[in-house]
Length: 68
Image 1: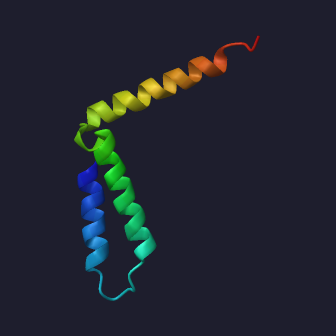
Image 2 (image 1 turned 45 degrees about the vertical axis):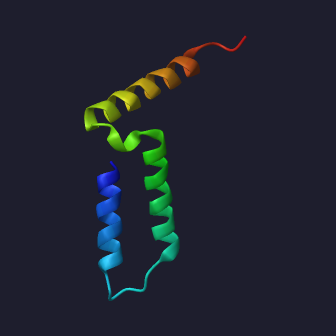
């Protein structure tokens, strides 16, 4: 995942015809750093999909439970 952010950031920085949007670059760097800190930059696509599926199931389970 971090490779995608790194490549997007590199391409964005290389554009000379448009003015640089420092806020966007800062946001991309923050997301990249957060992914690095939490270890998400090392997950394979299969692991990412498994995490997403598990989170969806957990949310559905909590939504379906009746409130007492």
